[in-house]
Length: 116
Image (cartoon, rainbow, N blue to C red; front, side, top):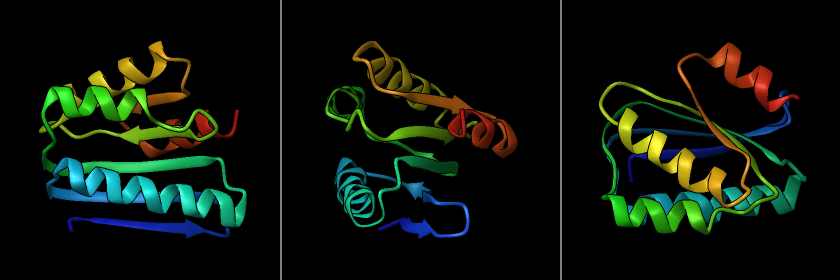
């Protein structure tokens, strides 16, 4: 699986790093791990780094994923050029359903938004 999910105790947030080709199965597995960290650590902030992702799941899978994302978890996504359109679609789907999710080009802005 081309994803790593971990809890950053110093920053008190969950981090996901993805690269290569991601399937919806990868995304769902990572979501399960994120939810587990949320319950174990009370971390409601998530920083997802997909700058090295080469391919994302298809639009329908992204739609369902965004629609079903946990509303309690504030999510900042660091996007790269290869999957920018897909990540922005995910942001739109999630935001339209009251989820706090936003795409960013740099980590400083993403972390600032997460801390608001």
